[in-house]
Every structure is written in structure tokens, then in C-alpha cells.
Amino acid sequence: MNGQYLRYEKRFVRAYGSRVAVVTGAGSGIGLALAKCLARSGARVILADLQGDKVEEAAESIVREGGVARAAKVDVADFRGVDDLIQRIFVENGRLDFLFNNAGIAVGGAIYHYSIEDWQAMVAVNLLGVVNGVHAAYRLMKKQGSGHIVNTASAAALGASGRSVGYTATKHAVFGLSISLRSQAAAHGVKVSVLCPAFVKTDMLVGGGKYGKELVPLTPEELKRMMDALKPVSPDAFALKALNAISLNKTIFIESPMARVMWWVYRVSPLLGIQLDHLMLKCSPLARTLQ
Image 1 (cartoon, helix red, strand yellow):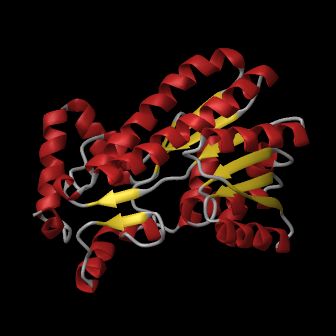
Image 2 (cartoon, rainbow, N blue to C red):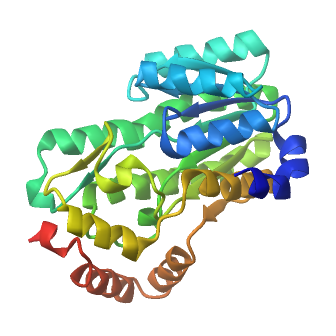
């Protein structure tokens, strides 16, 4: 990350230095990578996650490297907890510059394998978790006349994704919320961006970790084939490019060239986009898990 970071350092220091940023889902993966990069750029970062021990360790590692960071255990599906955190951070710092609504969970497999609890969990975290963050932070940012809300959706939000119907449904909603809120918030000096990662090498991608779930587990051979085919980027590499886009106030950030192509195809012809997704699934190491 060090060499790549130098490419963006001056811009990042201008954009994020001395700013106050809350990052949810910051105990691991993309959230942790965003938090580390923000802290390196001089931001005061609050790492929020339901995994209390993990997020404490993450914040301590940032402090050891010279950054300003603190941990907060919070369940993004609990509005009171989110609101209390946002209010407390605002009072303590006199401002809130960035909110990264990044926490998310995934359930992979055919929809007939889902339980109703799988549906409810994805809606509660992926959608209502973002709604809770927005509801808590937007009023404060509107009052102060500035701020930037960054919501993590997914490349799955840009078209059809037959492998992850429930996850895709929630991420479509986050995408729509983000671009619509941006239109409204601009009049009040508040910025809104949406991140659409495709394949990032996190535990959630492979159904591991606490918040990734495969209803039909992959064999080691299938997992290797999938990783070889997808060629996922590291969380650090994604965070650098995402923060660069945010510093430029981009509305939508799509890191993967393939995801950009898929989005273009889907916008031109939804039917063609669906057929292309179906073809890719048939040829994927994951095809067995949908049978």
C-alpha cells in the first residue's frame, strides 16, 4: 500500500486531513482498509463494528502507526445505537465530516435455500443499516452545511446477479437511496457518493468470516477456481481508489472494468444484461451451488 499511497498522498491530506470520519464495518475488509487510509491521511477516525474485540484491535493498530483512531461497538441495524454514536461524535468534535456506511452481510446460494431469517438479516444490515446512518448523520450535516455520506453498495447493484438475489436486492436499494439523496443533499452543501465494489478479497467474498454465509458451501477446489477466475483486488487497493474518487466528489465509484461493462450493458438492454449474467453463472465454478 505504501508505494501506491504516495501517488494520492497530497490530495488525500487536503481532502481528509483533520476531518472527522465514522466508518462502519471497520473491523475488517473494506471498512478497515478505508479507516487505515483515512487515518494515514490525517483524519480522526471512529471505527464502528459489531465485533467489539476485532474493532478495538483495529483501532489500536492504527494508533500504533501514528494515526488518530478510536473504536466503537455498534450494531448498524439498531437505530438508537447508531444515533447515539453519531450524536456523541458530533458533540465531542463539534463536527462530522464523513460517514462511511460500509457494514454489510452476504448470503450466497439459490433463493430456495434462504430462510426468512436470512432475508431479514440482509435487509436489517445492508439496507436499514444504511438508512439508520443516513438518518442520524444527514440532519447534522445539513445543519452544519457540509459533510459527505459514502454508502457501500456493490457491483451487484448495477444489474442482475443471480448468484446473490437477496444481497443484490438490498444493494440495489442502497444505490437508489444514494443517488437520490445526492440530488436532494446538494442544496444543503452535503455530498453523497456510492461505492460499488466487485470482487474484493475479503472473508465475505468466500463465505467466511462472521458476516459471510454460503448456503451450499464451496469445496476447496471450487473456491480456488472461483478466486482464480475472479482475480479479486485487495481491500487496500480498493480503498485507495475509492478514497480518490470520493476526494473528487464522484457520485458513483465502480472499481472493476468488467463491472462497468456489465452496468453499461444492463442500462442499454436489461434483458441482455440478465442473459449475460445467466451465461456467466452457467460457466462459473459456483453453478453447482444454484442447482
